[in-house]
Image (cartoon, rainbow over all chains, first blue to last red; front, top):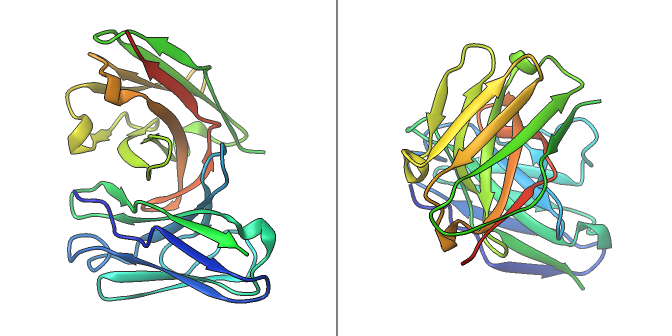
Length: 110
Length: 119
């Protein structure tokens, strides 16, 4: 199972919005509404910020939103803050009853 | 509160085995699966497999089938991940996580265990 495709890096200024894309196949993102997004700060464990395509766990800011169209999922962060600077990973359930992750996107808040 | 606490860093020689533990607390250990993920620094996570503490069912990712063994000890609410025949490219941080609230959604994570394979 190949990794999902994410841009290597994105950047934005405080207060702006950015979107990170995540492209998979008909066997993962396109087949199920089980896309998750994780935020990971350096040296820390990943943190779940979106599950089942659009749902936010309790305690996650509503500045984080997500969607899916076909084989591509997207994460949008609005009102960028300096603490949003981190690596972001998408993940999807697959037809093999496994999960595949993306290669990660480094967000820089300028 | 839910916590997953992993065992400490390991240094192993090529060909050796390593067993990492993940002790859960703050929830019913049998109610959710535990998954394991490998992450090489600077790269995305690799999904290794899941295990159900409830019924012992296990499913491995294709890359790890045959060299990785997942187990649980319900008496201590601890999950274990063992990798045999270690190679240098197994050097990575290994995480356990709770599978909740749905497929591919992992809401609580261990702190990670660095395994270094070096001669």
